[in-house]
Length: 334
Image (tube, rainbow, N blue to C red; front, top):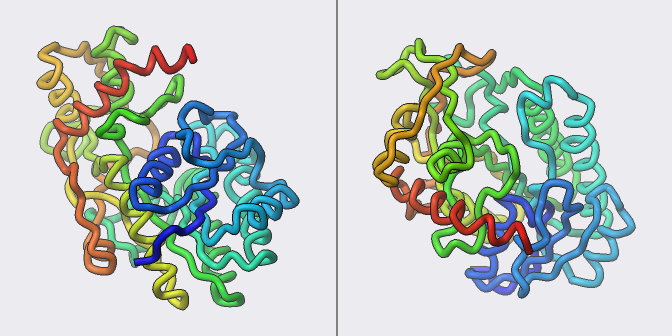
């Protein structure tokens, strides 16, 4: 196993990035965070991780960090992630997610940083014809967010073919939960994640939860998604990092999910169970572009990396999200 790698974590003050920083520290690596703090939080970066406030498109700054911190690899989380916003403002997404990533990759190649893990998404598949979804199935994103991520995957593929460089693009399904030790969690104001909204409602921060669509071809009529605990996802990044360093000629594009799903109602029922309190549910019409079910085929990451999730339990995911939400008010006043 590669040890003591110096890893630049872009967007490391955000939800998933901050958990990756914790996973790197727990594994004996040295995370160096760059975040512009537009959506991230300075307090989300642990004291024992080096922090730079800045933008990934600032090539002079990236070069300086690579040289000063002797960066071995990059985990790239920085970007914009709200699907409806990407439809309303596509140029923002092509700028933040695609153009800035191009600049970052150029800085890595110029400074001979040879390994990159990329935060991709199941949105690259669009509305798949079948589910579970395999990595070799067609990529037909239906929104600028998914397209901006797929374009980055294409850039990485081409750069790896032309340079001494390898990468792992991890296509996330629905990320949920919080660090089991309550060191970090989903902190974004106005977040659109179902579980975040549900735990806010359970704690009285919202009056109700909207359920968009009750006529899907699923067991209870509500959409089914593959929810993955953020700590399991962060662990997958560390395993991928070590695999890239161990086999520098090989790149990967892999799904990150549990291979099974829960409906919207099942998630809300789990919150009811854990809190012993009934959420108010507002039944509304479907949102455009939501598939009936979106579930990963995760056999490739399990077979290739030996990834073994620890938190594949909906009630545990809810418990961790609730524990984080309860203490979030205190942190936001810091």
